[in-house]
Length: 117
Image (tube, rainbow, N blue to C red; front, side, top):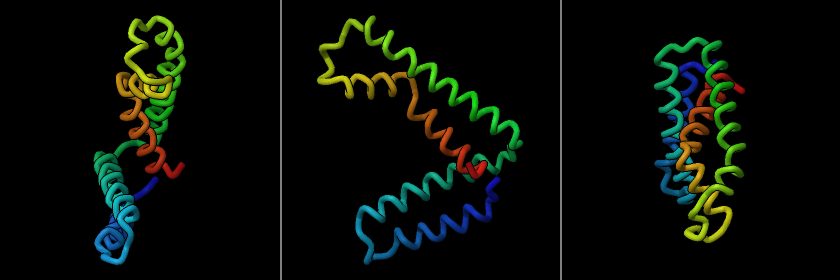
């Protein structure tokens, strides 16, 4: 499991990249996004979670994502408003946002990072 010290060291590295005037804009943006992610990880670790609980929560989140995504085809056939979407990709993105999939994926990614998976 990651320690707060390890994450703070990585935040320092990323902030030095973000503040470097010679870096490209895309690299600076990635560094800032990484810092935001790392701060989220610190807030998880400060609550002192049990690794067994985190593994159980990760399994629950993965199971929930797979169940929601398996119901997509059923939702798509029962959906009465397919004409408002330009294509299938846009409909899938709307469905994922409606079901809260991006937040679940962020939580899963955070837990995997903390558990070193």
